Length: 336
Ligand code: LMR
Image 1 (cartoon, rainbow, N blue to C red):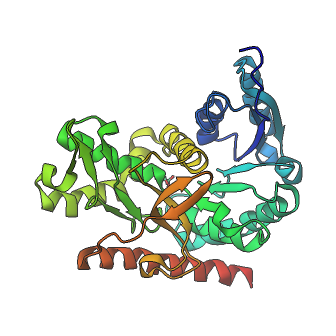
Image 2 (image 1 turned 180 degrees about the vertical axis):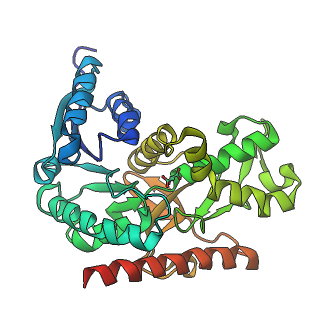
């Protein structure tokens, strides 16, 4: 009706916005895929000085999109200006992994970047700003951000493993020849890296008259305990090989899924995977940013408790935690 009051706009920061994921993500945000079709948004796009022209071009295209929800666009290379008043920060920017570059070298390049951006968020963002780190190594970048933005609540700093979660749903749907929307409750445990563990033990499939266990339907334990896990661990590499570029549209879409479910809530009976700070659940060292199954309600995530963990699962979950502890050590050694 004419009397409907429009919601106040939400300000969303996208760093590294001139890159591939940014180009896929900003129109999704402008169309309401992240925050809902009734939520006006103001976009702040940040990138480095050499990408200033590209960023300006993306801004021109966003304006030409004439998106009814888009109430403003800022394109800037000034991190402080970019962080001003932001409610949501999507961190795509980081030092990219070069061929043959190990995680240790990648971390040393990213520590400085994430320290600077954390300080800018700390000073200029809304105190309740929600942060999603996408740039690799995502979990450890998020950990650095958390350390240097101490006034942002620690539960507000997360990293993306929804991409892996969605990849797992897709693999199961393909295997069973069912629609991907009928599969739910896989779990991605740990790091967004090749040590992550895609766990299908609790996954279920909507068969029309209720839910059935995905493991029972797949009826191939060997596939679920080996190829399924490794195909998801290596999916990013497979995409780089095919596209000669990292995944971008699927990463952007997963970032929208992550924020939408976090803010608007997960559907009843459904959980998703998010990299969040560990409170010690499932014996994972407190303080690590680790991917857990979570449900969300009114902008608050909670780790799903009480899932049965066997010996096989335990070992895989601990392997990924060990890797994150090692990454944390490298990150801290760069700080001192
Ligand atoms: C992915 O999972 O597709 C990316 O994290 C891969 C990468 O290293 O860019």
